[in-house]
Length: 97
Image 1 (spheres, rainbow, N blue to C red):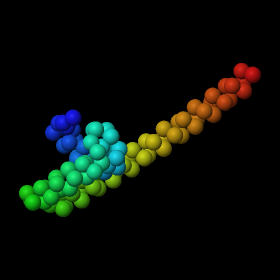
Image 2: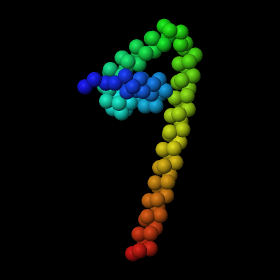
Image 3: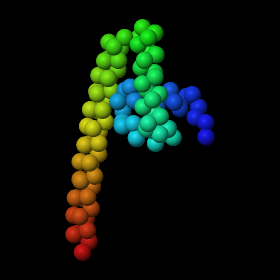
Image 4: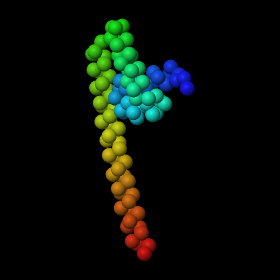
């Protein structure tokens, strides 16, 4: 199966943003983690060679870190909601008995 350029580009972008591990991102786009690592390395070398500096990479990593923090916070919020729903469900079950 030949991967389209758009899938490769999006996957490498997610690697740069740090939105997940190589394995998770690779699964999402149907790319092996080793091939995705190779693509990301090539892209980074190309960007550095073309003058897109480390400052831009650091800024992207910081954006990725902030995004990861927001995602973790949302997951925590969802876990709290799940716990509340479980508690309400248990209380309802007690009242129905």
